[in-house]
Length: 180
Image (cartoon, rainbow, N blue to C red):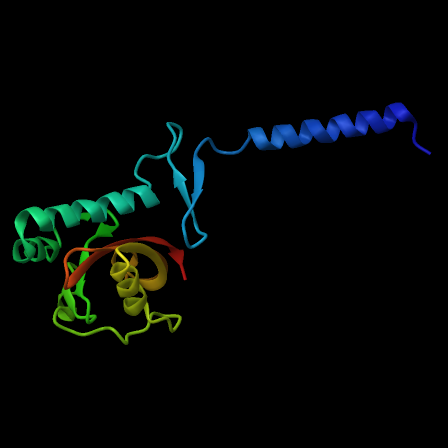
């Protein structure tokens, strides 16, 4: 049978270990996305080039504002440029009409004019329908699996954010979350 002081010592040691373990975690904060994925908000000790959910949303909102200010045709021309102002690191803007036809994509120009509403991702999800449905509600997040042009076109998990740009079209972007 353990003595009272031994039990107290073990309890204090456990409390200390739990406290120390919590103190060794990174200093960034994690924010749950609507889909349940985590996004890390960079702290001064973390790299500043991480894409966060907030960065993704701000990027799409900037593209919508650009389209509002410059008109649909000028915006689509800019969104289609692989070296344009709406390609930043892993982020790029894509555009679709509400029928599911691609109207801008800087890395898949062969898809422009193609209706992709019934296209599935690598896991069989109708990702264009899901993205369109979110845009019809104004905006939203969708998880899907898509080729990453920056990683030799390998299929990776992607969190997309979309926003309605007008009565007939919507814009989106996404951040890759790693191998599928």
